[in-house]
Image (cartoon, rainbow, N blue to C red; front, side, top):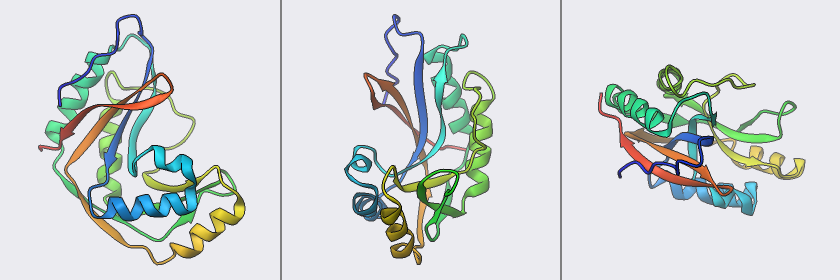
Length: 180
């Protein structure tokens, strides 16, 4: 997929770089997110976020995309294993699946992406995970924790996706293979 530049009249943008989940675990994760995360969770495919944020410090979309290309060219594919559901509560009402394998590779990718035009500040320390439920009741969060207490999913990460926030929705702009 070729990069889709943002319109020149939109110098400020929000971008996201994520690891998409391949089939067959993607369908299972979609089902769990629909059951425990509500209808809003169906708007976004299951993923692991690498970088997200507004970039407006002089970095252009082209600069950011080229940097992403360089990082992906140097990163070999790796395996992710997701474990039993846990929560960020009481700090944040979120239930997620933690990475039991692939954590270091995700952190290295995150750090590599932050060097250069994707550099930005975040109020949170980077913690790779796959969100199952958020912005739902405590009872729904508890149900997700209980139901997904024995989860173990594994998949190969061989690509990342670049998204842009446009008109209030995330739009896929590019899919890049990990080539390293």
